[in-house]
Image 1 (cartoon, one colour):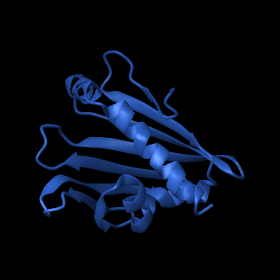
Image 2 (tube, rainbow, N blue to C red):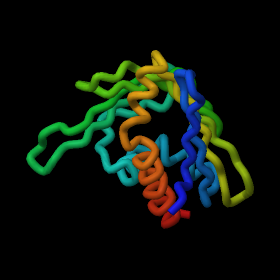
Image 3 (cartoon, rainbow, N blue to C red):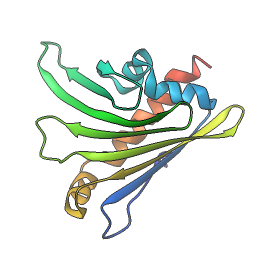
Length: 155
């Protein structure tokens, strides 16, 4: 089955571009990235902090049944324009990857459809290539599929 989330990585560049069209109104797609309850639902992680404002911060955590931390990530929000744009850093704690910079742009296609454009910049081409060797593209496509399914019920 073809992935609906497209990941484009040009050879020799330290960035990737991720795009996905959703059968969701723009406002609902934006809420998927800004409302903790919705973020937790589609990402399958706990939102410890989410300050949706310029110079705000965020932190997400996933634990196993015994409470052991499996994944923790955090960052700073550098720009926040409702229903348009979020610019943030992303850092995985206890991981070998450096901080990355993410530009998330939300675009209305029709009254009931919208598009997410993510431009992710890594410290180096080598780090970007290392991320792409992981099941990154499959993972983000699966997460976006969960986002679409979860929010279709709210639409």
